[in-house]
Amino acid sequence: MTPADTTPPLTAIQEQKKAIREQAHANRKDQENKDELSREICAAFMALPEYQSARTAMFYVDVRTEVRTRQDLATALAHGKTIVVPWCNDQGELELFRLESMEDLALGMYKILEPRADLRHLPERQVDVKSLDIVMVPGVAFTRGGARMGHGKGYYDKLLEHARPDAPLIALAFECQLFPEIPTQAHDIFMDKIITEKGVYVGKGRSRS
Image 1 (cartoon, rainbow, N blue to C red):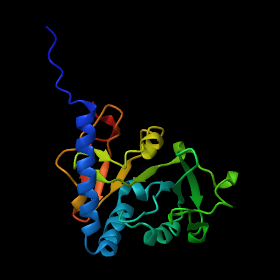
Image 2: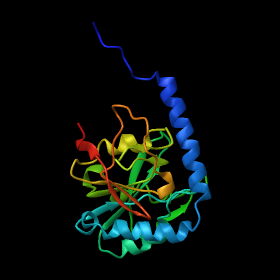
Image 3: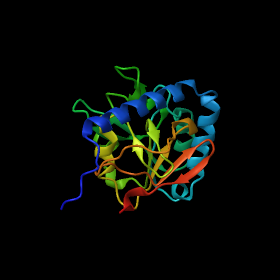
C-alpha cells in the first residue's frame, strides 16, 4: 500500500507564502533605524573571510525597504575587487554588470537604481555568473537554516542555479525577516549564510540532501 501523500496542495503552499510575504513586508516596513542597521549588516558581510578572499563579488542594489547596500557600494569599490551588480532585462532575467563607479548607476523606470542604459550592454561591463566568487542575495523572508523567499518571480533562483558551487550565497536581512519555517519546494535554493543585525546564521546551502 502506498503511503498517503502528505504534501499540501500547491494552492495551500501559495497561500502560506503569500501570508509570510505580507508579514515580512510589514515587519520590514516598520523596522526602525534601517540606515544604521544596514551599515552594520553590510560591514559584517565585508568582514567575512569569504568576502576578503573573493576577487569578484556581487552586491545587490537595495530597493524600497531592503537592507540598504548603496551606501556601502562605494566602500566596496575601493577594496580592489571586481564589484558586480545585477539588473533585470526586458525578458525578466537578471544580467550582471561590472560596476566601476557609483556614477555608473541611474534611476530606472520604476525609480530603481540600476546600471545606466548606455553602459549596461558594453561587452567589457558584462559579467558571467560563473566568475562570481561570492554572491550577496536579497529576499523577503528567510529561515535561520537558509531557506529563502523572494517576490515569487524567480529572478534570483534562475541566476543562482548557475552560480559556481564554491561561490557562497550570502543573504542580507533584518532580523524581523526571519521566520521559524518557510514552505520550500525541490527547486528552491538555500543560502550558505544569512546576516542580520544580530549575527551570522549558517544555512544549509546548496549541499543539502
